[in-house]
Length: 240
Image (cartoon, rainbow, N blue to C red):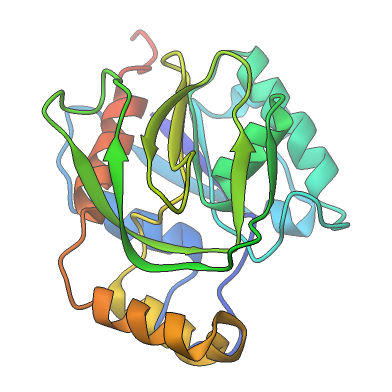
């Protein structure tokens, strides 16, 4: 399967050079897993206004995080919203992470906006409240790295909530077997997140930043969720 990673944002320019861009982080995450499906990943810089000519160029799509919000006046956002609707109407599998999660919700009739209670930052526990074929039925909760100010406030029609927490009501959702979206970052590492906190501490707030750093000393379930994303895509493998 050929999966397009739609690059909607880039790492902070003040980050140490050792940290990769978002598509590379996902490829590192996916390389940990073995699959019966042979996956190929291509990065598409949608943040630069680049989109595939048609949705049929790829077998599936993944939308990355971004420093932008869906409400921002950035030139790439309206065309991306249109392309998300085209992907959905073509019944291609679609994954969204953080901004991608919010963009999918927003494009398909939900709503995302800046959350009035500040940053979700560090490893945060979300409770699994919905079911999906690619999520083991005995999964009760997930500990995922979060870095976000915005949240999905209203789910799109026909979406089901997969995960929630006291801080983030719509932490993950699905639409049928075609859409899988989550607020947390399975691709982020504690080292990357700590470096980002160092840069953004003035905006995050010292107390919340300190709490986040403590949380990042614990294990997280990013690797497991990376496997779920591959399983989600594998279920859509085109017929030979």
